[in-house]
Image (cartoon, rainbow, N blue to C red; front, side, top):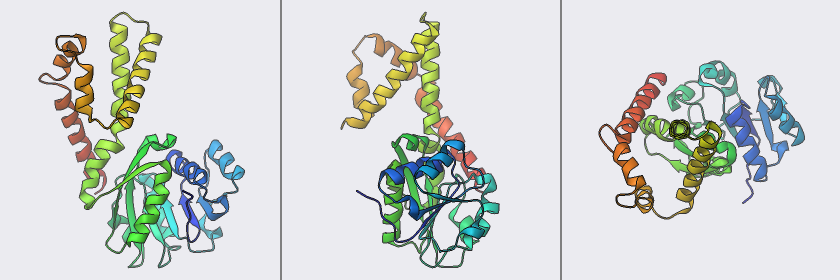
Length: 274
């Protein structure tokens, strides 16, 4: 399905996530002429992509004339306030402000905007770079269903989209799906190191660990079975997998460690949003 917008799309920040979204939007048929990127120094590969697709890049908002239909805020949280304050002056009554900045609340955007402007807070994750991300969204009270649908269409360019009823759930979302890819990458590191300790060469252990985790993820993605059932299907009673799982599912085990890890990430997310 080709993506369409009623007016220009302004993308503030063209880093990894902003760049991934831009690639997804172009792939879904959004004309480059409808996109304006505001970034004083985009990465070289992104700058080449912008030029190749006819996407205008403005260093400042002073050269942006029309009120955008959507402002996608994709800058780092540390510079959000200084970047968004001038951007807010471009938001018209029908503009949707969509932020993918971690830890920044809806209220932190509303304080810069005139009343009645739709604000959507979103948390994508890094698999968006290969079109397999998941993005959780929550909107302020004035956001209409059609505006939410427009945001869903845009974010679907890089993966699946889910909507939350409560903004306070965003801290747990950040801890599970936002930070989650790092946990998976750590699993690959640990599995590879365990293979090396068991006598494999570092290269072979790394290759086996990467392929196993990537393949298992794809199997989970394609299967209608839940993760617990897939795990049981691999586990023969009294076999090698069962022996390993006795360790991973013991006390303390992987579940306890993961619960503690997610809780720590939730606490940090709440600290950063204050």
